[in-house]
Image 1 (cartoon, rainbow, N blue to C red):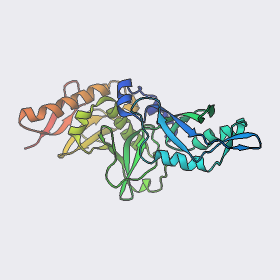
Image 2: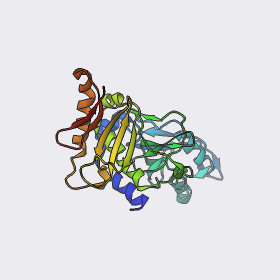
Image 3: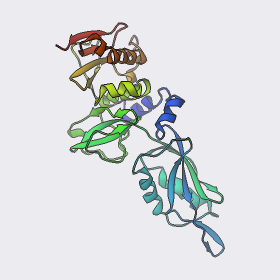
Image 4: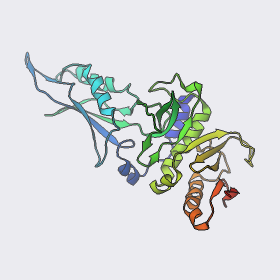
Length: 290
C-alpha cells in the first residue's frame, strides 16, 4: 500500500468527538482565512490587498499553531492586489493556499462584503513527530510532514507528541511529504488512536512517548507488534496497529482503557510495572519493577 492510500486509511477512522475538537481548537476544526480589505479605486475597479491576512477560527478557542498565520500571509502577499470584479482573480487565493501542507482542504474563494475575501479551510492536526537532524518535525494525522522544526520534542494540547520514526531515511523529507515507510504509518495509526482515546490526565502520566512497530518474540499471534516506550523505563505491548484491521484483535479503545487503568493504579499497589501487555481481555504484567 502506497503512502497516499495508507494516509487515507488512517484519516477515514472515527472523527474526533465534538467536545475534544472544541478543547483542542485548531486542528480538527474548520477555520476561515479572511483577507482584510484595503479599498483602492483604480480605473473604477475595487481591489483587495492580499498583504493583510489572518486565520480566524469558526469555533470559540480555535487558533492556528504558531507560525502558520505567517506562512499563509507570506504566500498570499505574493499575489498582489486582486480585482474583486474578476472571478479568475479571486480564485487565485484558493489556488495559492491549496499547496500549503498545513491545509487538508481549501474551498473556493468568495467575496465577503465589505471585508474582502473569505476562504473556508480545514487545518491538518499534528498527531506525532519524527526525529530530524538533531530535532523534531511534527506529522499530521494523515501522515504529512508539517512545516516547522523543534529542538525539544513538540507538544500538542495533550502533551508531548509521540515519536514514531527516526533514521537516515527521513533526512530528505520536506514539509508536505508523506511518511516514506509502512512501519511509520503503523506507528502513526497508534498515535492517532491514542489521541482519540486517552485523556489529558493519562497522557500526562505517560510523559514522552516512543512508538515502535517491530516484530516481537513476545507476540502470541503472528504479524507486526507495536510497542510503546514511556518515561520511567516502562514499556507497553500494544499488539498489531489499528490501521491493519486484523480480525480477532482486541478493540483499540479497550487496549487504551487497560493502559489508563494501570497508569492510575500502580501508585496504589505500591509497585510499578516495567512491561504491560494490553492485547488481551485481561491485561498482563510480564515484568514488574524491583
